[in-house]
Amino acid sequence: MDARATTNPPLTGPLIRPGASVWRAPMADRAACLVDNETYFRLVKHAIARAERSILIVGWAFDPRTRLDPLAGEDGLPDAIGEILNAAIAERPHLEIGLLIWNMVLPIAATLDLFPHRAAYWLDERIKLRLADDVPLGACHHQKTVIVDDSLAFVSGDDISPDRWDTSDHADAQPARELATGIAYQPHHGLTMMLEGEVAQALSEAARERWLVSTGEALPPPEPLRAGLWPEEIAPDFTGIPVGIARTLPARHGNPAVRESETLLLDAIASARRLIYVENQYFASQAVGDAIARRLAEPDGPEVVAIVSPHSPSYFDRMVMDAARDALLAELRRQDPHGRLHVLAPHTSEGRPVIVHAKTMIVDDTLVRIGSANLNNRSLGFDTELDVAIEAPEGPAGAAVRARIDGLVDRFAGHFVGVSPDALAAARARTGSLAGALEALDGGKRLVRLEPSGPGFFGALTARRHLGDPTGAETSFRPWKRRPGPARLTTGHALAAGAIGALAGFLVARVLRRGG
Image (cartoon, rainbow, N blue to C red; front, side, top):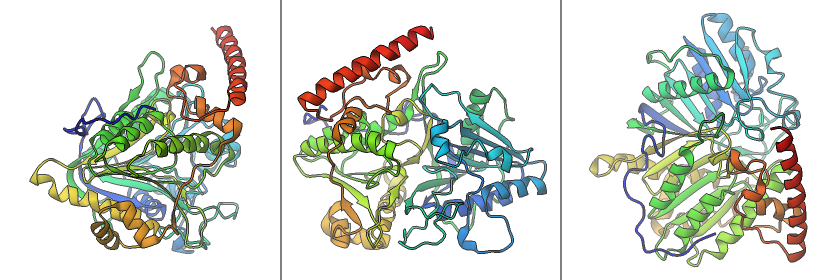
C-alpha cells in the first residue's frame, strides 16, 4: 500500500463525468434519500399499487414472502411482495411485470430457502421471472433497482428479501423483524435513493439492457413519463438536478469491463477537502484503501469516518471479507499519522450488533452516492453493480444543494446514535469534526470503534490473495496474479500459503487447459 504524502491539491473539476465516472447524468425532477427499509419497502408497495404500465425489479436476491409493510397490521390487503405482484396483475392484466434476479449458486440459495429458484411457483404465470446467469463464473448479478412505469425508480443497497426490513431506531425488541419462518434476525440498516423524472427512464433503460444481455429477450423500450407516482408524504431532498448513473459490468464475451463505479469512488476520495463519510457492508477494496491511505498521509487531508458492520452475518463472509477488512484497517491505522481515520461499528441501545448493508459515500458537501456497489474488489470490476450520485454545482447556484448534502451526513450518522440531524449538526459545529461530534453525543456506546482482530491462518491467506474477492474476470481463477493485500503472514504461514497457492494454481491451470 503506497501512502506517500503528497503536496498535490485535491482533485478539482466535476466528479460526475458522463462516459467516464458515470454512464449518463439525466435529470431528476425529485430525489429523496430513504433511511432504512421500513420506509423503502412501504413506498415500493404504494408505487406498485399505482402502477399503470410496468414494474421492473432487478436484484441479487428475491423472496416472494417478504413483507413490505409489517407494521400496517392485518387490514386484509396483501403485504408479501409475491402476493402484491399477483394482485396487481390480476387487477390490471395489461401490466408488464418483470424480475431479473441473480441465478444464485445453490450453496447460497440453500441458506435462503432455495429462493429465488422457488419464486416462480409463488408468482402468477404472467409475471416474468428471469434468473441472470450471464456473468463470469464466480461473479454475481448484484444491481438493486425497482422501476415503476419508467417514471419512479428506487436504487438501493438492499434486495427485497425477508431479512432486510427494519426501522430506523434499530430497536432491540422489534416483533416485525422476523423471517417468513418466524425466526428473528439481527437489526439491519440500509439506504435507498428514490428518483422521479428522466433519470427513472434511464434506469429503466439500463434494466432493460441488462435483461436483454442476460436473457436474450428484448423488452419494449421505456414509455413517456407520467405523473402521480411520487408519494406526497416524502419531501424531496433535491429537485431539478442531474443524477449520475455509475455501473460495474465485468468483461464478458469480448466486451471490456465497465468500471464507472470505481472511477467515481476514487475521484471522489481524491477530491475531498474536509470529510469522507462512508457506510458500507464491506471495507476491503485495495484500490479504495490505497486512495484513502494517500489522503490520510497528508497533513491537512480530510477526516475519514466509515460505518461498517461489527461483523458479517455469514461464516464465509467473516473468513473472506472480514479478514480482508481487518487487514486493510490495520494497515490504514499504521498509515494514519494524523489520527483522522475513524471506523465505527453500530450497535443497538442494549449493545446488539447492527448489520450495515448500505453502500453510500458522501464527500464534503459536494457529492452523495448511493447504490449497490460495496467497497470490495469484486464490486468494482467483477460483479454487476449500479449506483446513483448527486453532485453540487459550482458557485452560488450550488449553495442549496451543498446544504442538503451536508444535512444528509447529519441525518445518516445521527440515526445510529439516536439524535436528530440538528443535534448532530450543532455538535459538529462545536467540535469541528464528525467523529468528535459522534463521540461527544454517544460516548462510544452505540457507535463503537472497530478494532481489527487477528484473522488466523486461513483468514490471513484469503486477505493476502483476496480469495473470494477478485478484481475482475481476468484474475477470478488466478489469485496468484492479484496484487497482494496488506495481510501479514508469518514465515511458516507464508511457506504454507505458497504451497497451497502453487497447488491451487496447478489444479486451476489443468482445469482451464482441459476446458480449452
